[in-house]
Length: 111
Length: 116
Image (cartoon, rainbow over all chains, first blue to last red; front, side, top):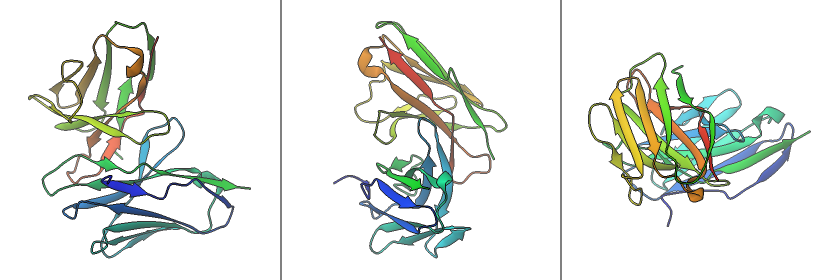
């Protein structure tokens, strides 16, 4: 089983739609969680950190369920500019520094 | 936010040559930098963790003699792909942890390597 798994995608949604991405991780000792977005042929950029209490940033809401080892990202009122690959990222341990990336879920927002 | 640069942004080379990629933290000091590789339609895979003033820590399956990492200063890490072969063609991305601690990583723009 991969350390981090995501919805396979791609997701093709119309502008204004609400879309949710799911991510699961296998290491229960994982400490930190992030969503990054990666545009085609570009580097990943931090979208938001994910906290146990859940957090929201404008149209984006992230949730973490440690018991189920599950992370989600909700995008409301999607824009064309949201089209990208969304990467679920996990830091595997308290003392580890490295990131483990999920395979990504591609989103295309259509006009 | 923290800015990380990479140079070159792309390189085409003949098989057997060595290619050096630089990663710089522009406005902060980075004691730790990370090198990733991304093949088409795949996610980023960590190759090694680069620590300033000490040897890099390589992930399983990554040949340390082929991918030489030097982190000689707090703002510069280099990755040298030695005797590159076509299968080394990939998107190489470095990252650094931000200037205020924490675990967020800031990524360089990446280097596309094509080995002919």
